Image (cartoon, rainbow, N blue to C red; front, side):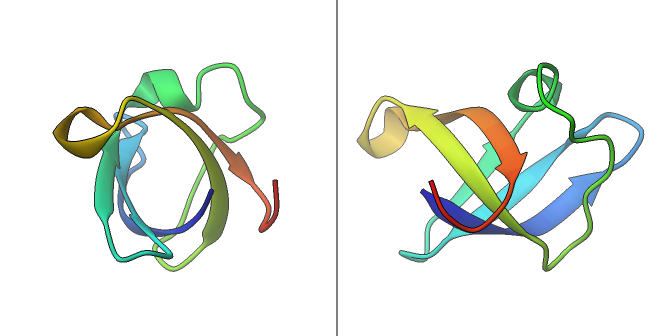
Length: 68
């Protein structure tokens, strides 16, 4: 799934993304810990992998790029 970074804290490596369907999803350091991501900026396009659905939807991986 594609998304845009809407918030990011460089000290905690956590923040939120806005999906292309208009849903804001928070992420924690665990979403970027096994990826080459070391810094993000608001407005940056990213790819995300998720688990769950509805209110239980969670980001499991966040990477650079615009397509899966």
